[in-house]
Every structure is written in structure tokens, then in C-alpha cells.
Image 1 (cartoon, rainbow, N blue to C red):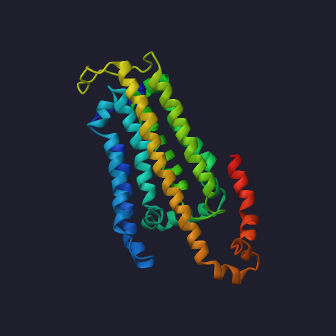
Image 2: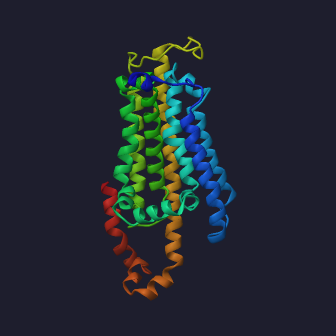
Image 3: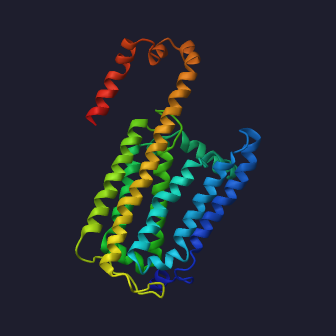
Length: 308
């Protein structure tokens, strides 16, 4: 009986009820939150709303027909699923900055619980770039192990766990990357940039290994969606290319957005320098006015960045 429950999949690969349930819940919270936030912080811009729903749509595309059934017969199509779930969908959602809206749409008890978490160790843990980066990289490498990959193809619950872990890791990572807060509440801007390059290197490493290997490692089920004209080794080569090039391009976009956010943060600090300097004499050191003062301020950070 237990085995039957594990392998039970009433809708096959055509429809993912769990993805519809999660996305329906997120949509409901977001729509409720829009009404609340409009009274306190003003209206959320149209482009932010569009990005949030576009991100949800990307997750739906990745977990339902026609891509999901095709992913069970073609390795390359399965890597497109992973690309959408782990990187593209979470990036688009995180850029829309929906967290305050979702929080406003939740119940009062949930808001109190989230407020307590926001000021504790868990919030600081979530802003650590090293841990978020390790989870994002691990969510790809673990599920690319051929034995685990084959099990996830056979066991519906394991595949759901794989896709859920990738999506959550992506949301965690990109929410850390695009956090508008400065340290210590948010992660250091330089660390965010370095984490982006680390993820790119991991994509290049795994993607190149998968692309240039000379034997087929992944066994996929036959499916009516599979035309049979794409050989297994060629299919895996194309899948490795998906891990390598498109995934790295997504991270390049993320790095550009982080640099843009860094520039915006510097402009905010500069525009508010008057208030900061009135409140603290030591804050004047943060805004050098001569070349000598500027060298004193940036000498140490520039040296550390160069060594990195």
C-alpha cells in the first residue's frame, strides 16, 4: 500500500495539481495584499505586478504539459524544466519584490510570526550569500546524479521534491541577490556579485562535463511525445548545453541587476548624506570630499576585491 501511494500519480505528467495549488495560493495572497498595501505604501507598479504573474506562469509552464511529459522522454527538455524552475522563474518573481505584498495578504497570525522571524537569527541566516549559493548549486548537482535522476523519473513524490527544492533554492538565492537593504540587514553587495560568478562557474563545470562526455548516463522512459529521432547521447549533449550556456546567461542578467541595485543604493546614501552627517560626526567619514580622503576610504576594500 505504501509503495502504491509513492508511485500513485492520477494525472500522469500532463497536469501537476501541486503546482496549481501553490500558485493559486500565491496568487490569492498577492491579490489580497495588493488591496492592503495600496492603503499604506501606495499602489504597486504595473511592471512589478506583471513580473510576479509572469514568474508564476513560468513555473506552471515548467511543471505541466507539454513540457513536463516531454521531460520524461528527453533529457534536454528536462533540463529546460530545471532552468525554468531553478533560475528563470525565481529570478522574475524576485525582481518583482513581492514579499511585502504577500506578507500583507496573509492572516494576522502569520504576519506576527513573520515579524518575529524577521528580527531573529533566521532572517540573518537567510541573508548569507554563501549558504544561499550553496543551496542553489546543490539543488542542481544533487538531482543530476544519474541514480537520483532515474529515481525521480520513476517516483512522482521524489520528482515533486526535486522541483520544489530547486524552486525554493532559486527564490531564496535571488531574493538575497535583489534585496534592496544595505548591510547588516542585507547581504554585502560585493558578496552578491561574487556569488553570481560562483554559480556561473558551477554551471560551466557541470554543463561542460555533461556536454563533452562520450557515454550516455541517463535512462529515460519512452513516451509518445518522444519522436525517437534524437539519440540519447545527442540528447544529453543538448541538455548539457542548456546547463552550461542559457543558465550562465541568466546569472549574467542577475549580476547586471545587482550592479544596478548597488548603484541605486549608493545614490540613496549620497542623497541622504546630510541627515546622516547631522546625526553622527563619524558618518562624515563615509562621504569623502577630497582625493586623499577618497583613497583612505577605498584603499582597503579595493585591495580585498582585487585579491578575491
